[in-house]
Length: 343
Image: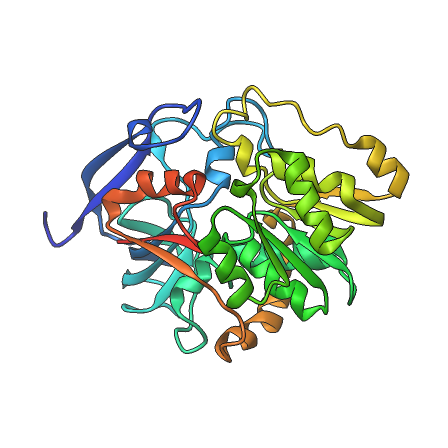
């Protein structure tokens, strides 16, 4: 390595998964990265790298919200928080913190226009990958724009202990709603009730089927006005028959289907008659639909974060080499809140 190069490590996406994604679908490679910069270029060293469910969606061999799957033999796309190592861009200097879609690599060169400068005094820099980043945008606009909650309504959130769901629980409470959180495991449910303030928390793993889960939800909350769905599968089968008149169903994710149900989908719930009876609406939403309104969300949520009024749990996995295993943790439930890898 010379003064004009840096040693770079990259995780290359090599093989399409048909079930759970893991290390066998990636290859770790090392190479020298030319550190010479063009005008307005910046060299960034990764400090925190995100793992998110959309990565598995993008690996589907069938069209999703992207017409083509994530290409093989390239760096895995991902959001990164890093520090500037060298800069030829005005407004960015060595040591500055930035966010960018730089992928699973320890170093990257990027044009300054592709980076967002972060202010560590506003909030921990890792929040650019969580509550003040894409998951936060998903939770805020998914609930407020698609869910349209009103005080006193019942909001059911599946995947409620995850990066998005845990924020939806808190935002719904701020709107004056009653919140029933669905998650896997007694510890997560206790956290949702005792820390995040959910009115009820239900462990779906403690129920043998959708009918049993539905009976518990009905006993606790009665009907459902807003269903924020991160999971699909059995939980959705249980919730749909419980919707109230003019309920709003927000399809944010279907993580129960991502490990094997993307290319050969399982049959969905037989729910259309309930949509008709209750004149309800069902709407899919993606974070990318609201990128242009990110400043709006930051103006509202960042002061809450700074004042300590929002819980933004982070599960941090240590080590760049753990990225594929960390991605797999999203689908096995071995985390709470936002899942990050610290380089």
